[in-house]
Amino acid sequence: MKREKIRRISKKRKTSAILFILFLSIIGLMVFYIWIYNHTNMMFREIEELQRKEANLAAQNRIVSVELDKLSRSDRIKKIASVQLDMVVPAPETLVVIIDPNSMKIN
Image 1: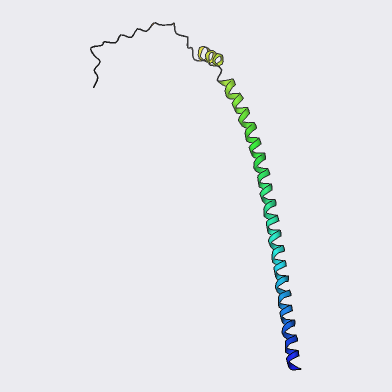
Image 2 (image 1 turned 135 degrees about the horizontal axis):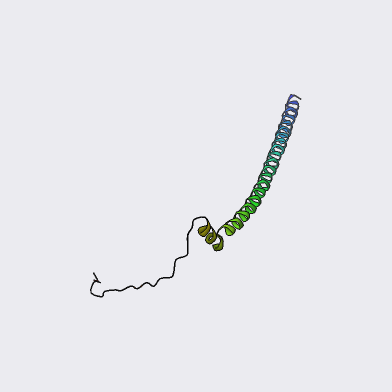
């Protein structure tokens, strides 16, 4: 009779231990799932924020590019040079280059 009682106790302990371990495993998996879910949401929010920043910077880049094109037009530069700096367009010159074949040496 004592042996049967000891066996019953040990079977109950085994069952209780297995259920306890299973319960802890389920809780651990739930905590892990919640952590992964939270981390994923944070990453999506960060990605969306970075995409908004990228779109904003691209728009600013287009604006600056248009402004650069406007400021670097040759007629605008010519007008500023002549009006504000009193510069004039030089008369065309003819340039003649004479090469003396005797002065060239090949090493």
